[in-house]
Amino acid sequence: MPVREILLLGDPQLWHPSSPVVNIRSRETSETIGDLAATLDDFRERNSFGRGIAAPQIGAERRIIFINVGDSFPLINPRIVRASRETMEMWDDCFSIPNLMIRVRRHVEVDVSYTDEYGSQKTMKATGALSELLQHEIDHLDGILATDRAVDGRSFAMRNVVK
Ligand SMILES: [Zn+2]
Image (cartoon, rainbow, N blue to C red; front, side, top):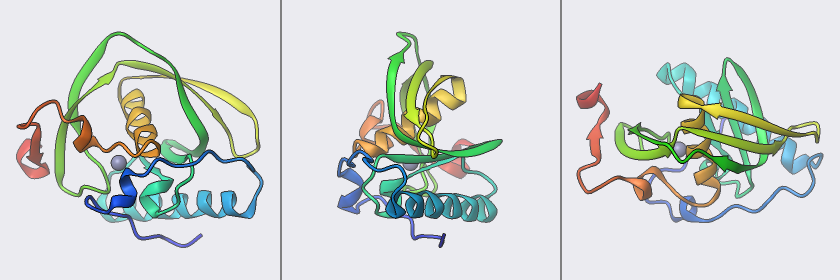
């Protein structure tokens, strides 16, 4: 479960859509999950923030995200199955775009279906910060970055300016 290098904005791989995971129990799947966990932990230790990472950010083009929201766990093949009509606008950030905050619009609530690491099918209802996090990470699996979602041309600010 090595800590992996996080790809940065400009690396074309970040804009590639990822493939679904077919075999939950394959060595490749468990290695990717282990690497995501280690890389997220390492980022949190060094930066004192960070709630989620997506497999394409470490160069693995598979539909896996890993979140730490108190509990930490992977979501395999996550899919938004319901999104509220109500939206919210907020500053978003991304491990792949260090120190840049990006103003985006997200659904207030989403329901996300996914497979857990044991192969069980689950649905998570998310609102507010968790909803925003899941939309951000699932976007990575479709090759969409926060910069692609910027509300307008002035939706960018350095972290220490907006904080
Ligand atoms: Zn990101």
